[in-house]
Image: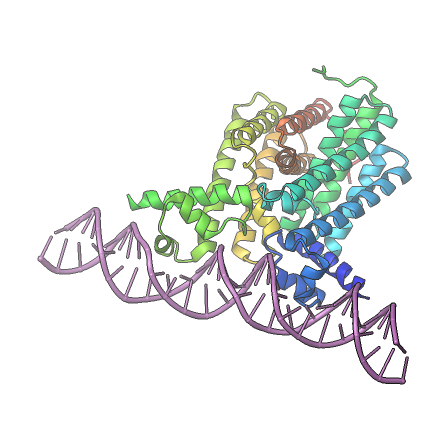
Length: 199
Length: 199
DNA sequence: CATATTATATAGACCGATCGTCATATTCTG
DNA sequence: CAGAATATGACGATCGGTCTATATAATATG
């Protein structure tokens, strides 16, 4: 199946971008690792590398969204959901020998505004993940404002933990941060009215 | 002063890496923006681009460490120190038109293990920043274990918030996350014994 | 069944960019 | 002025991404 070549290219691209960054993943690398011939790229992706990268990133975003959604719905509470998702991320980090990472972070850091399309996809992904957390938190009784703030903090914590874990080649930081955030959420939910004044 | 050219190259390199990533900052870009001729690079940095990048990164690390240390020592409490540092980061983010960022994150994400030296410098920087927070938290009465965990969480939150802020072109997420983390720290300090069991 | 026609897939040439290197020019210093 | 320190831009090997020209597989047609 020719379609197999296509999906193989996408998967390889996603993996290489996560491992080496947007510009670090060259077409030669991608083609070499995916075993696809050079000329096939422009046939499957008339838009060139940018189109390939966009699809690869969207594939990674979709998978992450799906797993996050499943994890949150299966969890007994928002806090437990967060804990579980961070643990899953930690697991992937070790399994991948510390080449795993967020599918959008490398593009955000490597592409200034090089591609409006790529940047928009990154922005949308971060918002989607934030909203998944926010909805869960609101369903548990938090105000939209506070749920939103906590949700953004959860996403930020995970993004940072992924980077630190790779740098220090230890996934414990991901579970640690996840536990800390989970505790924070549990505390926020147990106190109907937060201790601080709101603006 | 020839030394002036050298420092100008370092500053430009740091800025471009923060804006476009390690591989996104080409020598042509660096030389063009710093106004330095091509050949001067190899005179000032016999190690080539890698040596230049290493020095640029270390310069950024040093500055960040200095500012963080000053902010924490001047702050009335650890929580206020965190709040202030996050606010300073948010300010730099808007001032730079969202090209500001952590000096090590782009290298961690772009360099697989391409350079042991670069990777080691990144790792050391993250550890140093973590220890600065940890010391402050311990001085305020937290156990080393809990202080360490909170410190790692602070660093991770900031790293992630910087990425999200750039993607969404808004610095409010940095201050929001900072306030949230500051509240968490304040709560941890007000309760001598944390609510959760420790391992 | 043989051939024509199209859809699919590939190979490899192309050109610009990147990075390291060097021979030479200029400026500083004693 | 001598000699060291620094600056300069041209050069080439390599790699990057794009594209056209060709081959293979699928389907249609007599």
